[in-house]
Image 1 (spheres, rainbow, N blue to C red):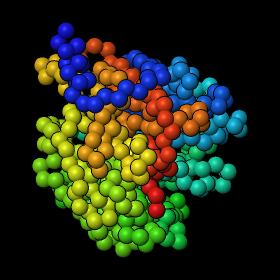
Image 2 (cartoon, helix red, strand yellow):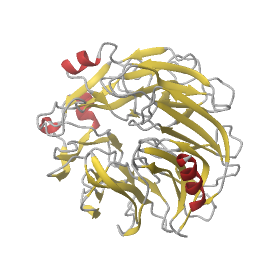
Image 3 (cartoon, one colour):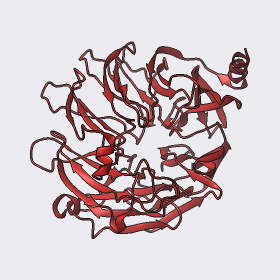
Image 4 (cartoon, rainbow, N blue to C red):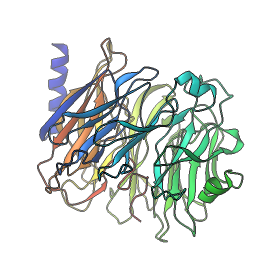
Length: 479
């Protein structure tokens, strides 16, 4: 009865505009940190939903799942030995005109999965977690495609492998991470090199195309370990197989660079600039050519675990920045602050204390077709502090008009770190939002997740940031 009362109260606090829930699918024995990605796997003309799941240190049968975009029914699932938290990439390597799914996570887990059948095409490591750690293969982080490096006709994968999942916060000696290129066709290592200064890394590498040849942006450090933001020529990794000529762009003496940077042209020079949010809750805009600081904002007493999103939020042509900072120090936080920064000037345009355990990125969409984007994110609410029972709902926030409302229904549980995704599944001009949420780990029940498709029943004219890492799934917004 207590939970029901909180549900009713939560529903009536805001102007709730209930869109149709097209389907909702429960995934047993798994939590979701991955964000949804979309591809038509069953050749019915409708995009399907692919997402990683799992539990840290535990094998599960629902480690990777593909859901029918029409009704949410399971197309296939892959059992994994630990948690899969990266978001899927796609490439057809079997020649059947359906893309394979490429996805990874903890303890050297990385897979290429047949998009039609769900069978594993290749697996980077098929032995135990303990064996992978013993020889230095650690976690994989969000990846991106690079051009064919071994002349086999297929794109290859740029990845970071690092982050000792058994290290304690006070441990200062950490295994050195590696930048790697994996063959998209076979999963074999094409190139690998240790991170400078023999540092750990949790940062997913990003490609910059500002000069005559591509460069790699990568980060080092952790929650309690200092680190830096670095740039190196892609050819140094792929041909020289070392990072000795890497340039240090920015250093933090206390904490590391964990989050993906995002890229857009902030100063109108036709080159992308770098927006880096470091763990100490400092958000820095860096000129992509000179590495000079364009602007910087710090939030003392806070930390940042939310990869920034970009959108037209304040009314000019330059993309603006959204993130969430958490008050406190890892792993204990008492409050969460939403932050919007004007991309052109660096001015903090808007903040709001909001939600509970808010670690999920937002998407940016022009919902009312007025030329300014709204933020869509999964709002978590603690409804019972004694049991840590929580609910969540998709919130739409228009900072230009200082308005907010909710769409879709209220779900039990929490959005762990999964960004919503907006997509036109049927290519019919009407968009859907896919949201993935999970039960909270302190609940005395079997873990589960809910993947929900919310039908907007409207045509959305402009979508700036449709999902995790933006329109190209590589952190780059419009130039």
